[in-house]
Amino acid sequence: MLSKTAIEPIIPTQKLKPLEDLACTVLESSARLSARIREPLHTDLAEITRWMHCYYSNLIEGQQAKVCDIEAALKKDFSAEPKKRNLQKLALAHLEVQRWAQQSTDAPHSQDFICNLHRRFYEALPAEMRVATTVNGEETPLVPGELRNNDVQVGTHVPPEHTLVAPMLGHFQNRYESADLSRIQRIIAIGASHHRMAWIHPFRDGNGRVVRLFSDALIRQLGIDGGGLWSLSRGLAVFRTEYYARLSNADQERSSSRADDGRGHLSEIALWEFCEFILRTMIDQIAFMEKILDLNGLERRIDHYVQVADPEVEKQADRVFLLLREALLRGQFERGEAGRIVGASSRTGQALLSLTLKAGLLQSPTHKAPVKLALPAKVLDTYFPKLFPVGHGGAE
Image (cartoon, rainbow, N blue to C red; front, side, top):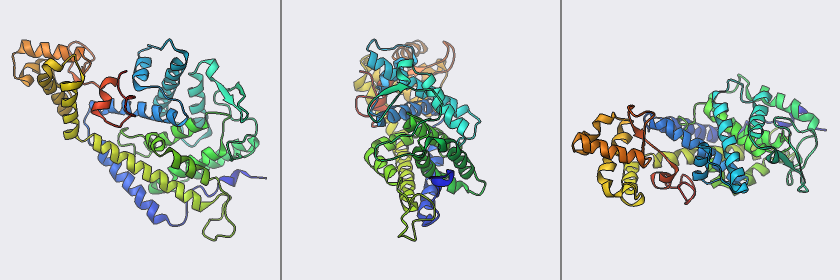
């Protein structure tokens, strides 16, 4: 019979230097990324990153709404096609939970926070989508935020008895929130806690999404989210096969024949390997975002977009590009500056500004407020190549 301590070890205790070096790289590179883009563009890019987390977390589950469909859903423009409409609602639920988690003051490792992630996600879905699927493919109603009250099997993994879920989550919080863990250890523990929560399998369904939302919250709390400019879920989707293999491998019990496999119930070697995978995935995704947010490259891609990709502005592409470049480099500019920026009269400048605003390439909260770069779905494939799969980042 398992006990609440069966999730031990909660973090690798051997061969720590390689993991610590990777954690330091995450810390340093995320700080570098956060300084790459100035406001207000930084805030808008952080919103696109939330779209990434939503898109890729759902993609891992075999469900995906195109980015243009997510954009439409945010405007309450839902598809008439039931399957597409449900995917839009799934995306909106994901985005809302992310926004809530960003503002929440709850301890991320607490049962309350974890249950709230699940509750808020499923409460935002229509009743027909609040279901749990059994191993036999049967669908039964799912209560949002409720810990599972039955024993289950997930593939080859048999999670702990349902009566142990709450005690294990209590131990989970006590151990991962221990004051004895340094910041570097807490970064290493992102991967460890990701696996341990998945292993506990707290809910009848939705555990994968909740675990990734939980890890996203930890990354933000530890200040290594690069100002909200990178997504772990994108990396987990890119390396999906390895992600699942290493996640499954970490389910192994400790090998009694190996002195280096720790002293807990679960394999320390397999946990070390999963933590290394998560840290390397973080570094890969931060480096990816650093590359596509390089201002010189971004400037060239914006120029390419207005020259060849948008018929609304292509006749005035050179001058429209000057307005977009100004917004990119300065963050925003006053409307009255348009003529100077394009090297023309004030009247011509205002006409070009109106054209660019109408095309959705610049935006402004009011008719008199400064203008800033806009990031509609239609530009994402060109501005930020490979942010989403080809054809999923732009308009249909």
